[in-house]
Length: 549
Ligand SMILES: Cc1ncc(C[n+]2csc(CCOP(=O)(O)OP(=O)(O)O)c2C)c(N)n1
Image: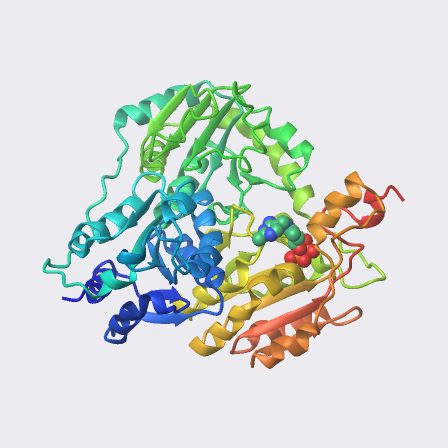
C-alpha cells in the first residue's frame, strides 16, 4: 500500500472522522489518499491556526485524540499555536506535518524546518518518518503517546517523497492504554485525612470532564459536604447552582475569594495538574509549602509534587476514586455547614449580576446574562481569550449538562474555529462562542469553513474597539497612557454578512433579550455583533476606576 494510503487507513482505524487541514504541495499524496476515504471528512480551513484550534477543540470536547494536517515550513509555523495550546491544555492532538523530500533534507531547502528543534519543547514527541515501513509502529504510537499519562501533542513529520513509498505492513487500530484504577487503600488514605478536616475544599480539574467524572464529583461532594471549586475553564464540571459550588478559579478570581478558600484545612486537588492559573499563580495552594495538607489525585505521577509539597499523592483515576469515597460513611459532614455556608454566601454575591448603563456602548455583561437565560441547558460554551469572557465566568451559572471549552493557554483566536468544530461534530448541540474584536480578526475567517461545512455556530462578538484585556493592564500600570491597544475595526456586521452568516446587531438602547433570543432561534450560522462599551471594560472594573477617576 502507498504510505499516504497507509496513513489514511490508520487514521480511520483510530476513529478519526475529521482531518482539519490547509493543503500544501508537500503532502499531495496524502490529499489524494483522503480522496478515497468515505470515513474521514477533510475539513479545509482558511488558516493553519484555525485547523489546529479545531483539532484542539475536538480533543477537548471528546477527550479523544483529534488530528490536523499542515504543509511544511509556513504551514507548520502557522499551526504551531495549536501545538502550544495542546501542550498547555494537556490535549491529545496528533499533527501531520509536511516536510521536504529526504534527498533535500539538511540542505536549507525551500520551506525546510527542523521540527525536532521547532516543536521539541512543546510536543510530547516529534517523529520524522524517513522510512515508510516505520509507519506501522509510529501511527498507533502517536495516538497512544498523545493520550497516555498527561495528554499532549505529537507531531508526525512526513517527507514528501516518503508518502509514495510502499508499505507492506497491516494497519492496526488503537493500542490499549494503561490506565490507573483506584484501590480501596487509596480511598482509605483519603478518607482518613478527610475524617479530621472541618473545612475541606476540592479543586476539580479537566480530568473530571467525563460523565463519570462529573457524576463522581457530585456524589462525593454531597456525601461528605465538601465544597468544590472548579479550575480555569473547567466551570462545567460541577453544578454552579449547587450550594457546595465554591467558584471558578483563575484569572479574575478576586483576592477575597482566594482568602476565603485559603481558610481550608484540607485541599483535595482532583484531576488537575495544579498549574499556574489553576493555583492562582501558585498562591493557592501556596508553593512550595501549602498552608494546609494537600491531597493530589491525578492519573499520572508527573504533575504530583512538581511544584507543591504534597502530603498524599495518588496516581489514580479520580472519577473512580471519588465514586468509591461517595459510598463511605461521612465523618464531620454536619460540622461543615458553616464553612460551606460562608463559601455559598460569597459565591452568591460574587456571581450576582448588576447591569450598568455606560454612555459609550452596551454593557457586554447584559448580553452574556441574556445568552445564559436563553441558551439550551446543554449548550456548549466556548470562550476566546479576552475581557469579554470575564462576564461568562463570573455570572453564567453553568451545570454539568453544559460543555465549557476555552484555552487554558489563553490563546486568542480559539473560539471561532472551536465553535465551528463543535457545530460540525454535534449539529444537535448548540455551540455558542464568545469572542472579542481582537480574536475575531485573528481566526474569524473560519466562519467560511463553517459555511462550507453547513455548520451552525452562534458567535457573539464583543466589539469594543480595543484590545481590552491589555488596556486594562495598561490603565492599571500606566494610567491614561494609551499605547498599542486601540483597534481600527471593519464593519463587523457587514463583514459577517459577506460570509453568508445570519447577522444580528446589538447597539445601545436595543432590546437585548429579544435580539439574543432571536439569534439563538435562527437555524444557521449566526454572528451577533455587539457594539460594546469600552468604559465597562470587564466584569470587574471600568476604565474610570482604573484611572482612579
Ligand atoms: C494569540 C495571542 N496574542 C496575544 C495575546 C495577548 N492578549 C491577551 S487578551 C488580548 C486582548 C483581547 O482583545 P479582544 O479580543 O478585543 O477582547 P477584549 O479583551 O477587548 O474583551 C491580548 C492581545 C494572547 N493571549 N494571544
